[in-house]
Image (cartoon, rainbow, N blue to C red):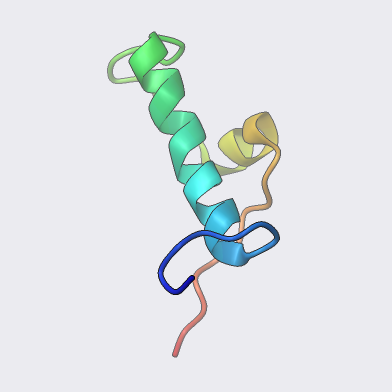
Length: 55
């Protein structure tokens, strides 16, 4: 299953973390021009805030 999110993988968590804010925006849970704070979003969506790894 290359290039597909699999249970327990970092890719699945990444897709979920990206999808949750997107859905909140589409539902109108976040106002236009609302200030988004990384730490607050991480807590709200139950994910950890982590800087991207440098290759």
